[in-house]
Image 1 (spheres, helix red, strand yellow):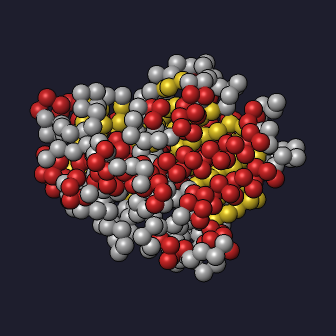
Image 2 (tube, helix red, strand yellow; image 1 turned 90 degrees about the horizontal axis):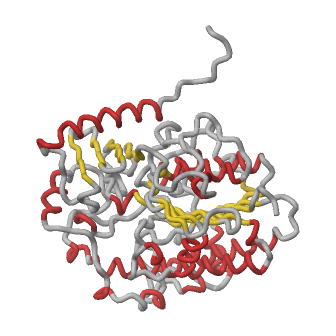
Image 3 (cartoon, helix red, strand yellow; image 1 turned 180 degrees about the horizontal axis):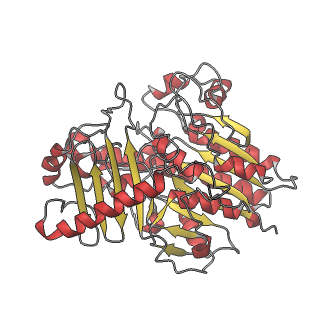
Length: 467
């Protein structure tokens, strides 16, 4: 067995941290992901570095904050050519790398996303389950080759059936890639990026029928949320502030859970392919999502310039049976940049000095305590949404979260939020103006500022002489 494992890296889109049955949600159906929890290490306090797709993906594909690499927006024209992504580094170390689905380091609007120097020799592109791209959209071509009309199916009463769904297509591609690697001497990395459970919440009818809206717990919401969000109404968000009833939140939650159930079933097919080809013992599996979803929490639906737990806290599971801890749950604060550094260490690639992330493998191997990794985690939102299509107004904000408190600064509106997550884990009581918490607030503001300067300032090329 090699010390450099194959890597199966599965990334969902917009999946909250609290959507896994084995980690405490009795309303979801996730036996495959549950298996990873039981066989691997689940990081229960993992945070994305932006609540929006492109900056988050740019961050974990480089291990650096999006502001550091100057790639903070959705809809951006290009990706910085001087910034290597981790798959390029891994490919240079001898791995065969494959990408399936959504990449989204730059705009896919009105064009197929241009390739960068990404290191992938296997590339099966599908930004979203629509037929908007005249060429280069492998998923739409796959549907058409099976006699389907993707746009007609999406608008039908039964939606896209399971056999033609993008999540199914992704599994078909993954199985093709895995089957082709059985005779390879070199290890491989496969990055699978499904679109679900991203809105619109339209799972196949057979999955939608399994989840009763009346049985759903609904969002984390209090009437006081409406007044609080009204204070923040000028700050970017994709949807209007509404009650759960106005959002139809229970029905959307049922559909969202249905989409996750389909992901789980399709993920099982990929793991079965690993078993069938005799590769599971030398394959490390990483499961995560690019960011979360508010799903009606605090009167909000979808995503934007907020940093509530449902939006910035994501699943992160690392599994390599026989080599890493089994059934370990770490509540240490970690970032998706740390996932990036972990992938580098797994593949034997030296971590570059500019990378913000640090490898989690000491925790995974049982060589470090599972309850501490970082003093704080950060997330950013810098003019991330398009003003013409997705509700952007040019907002700028940062989140600084330590073990107990979460500070959010809305820099362009002179507003902020402060929550005591030990006493108020779902962020209902804003302590920003609390006289008893001003010293804490000022300390966190200073810490946040210092962290931002040190982590996002590009100090230029390396030193070669004293002057």
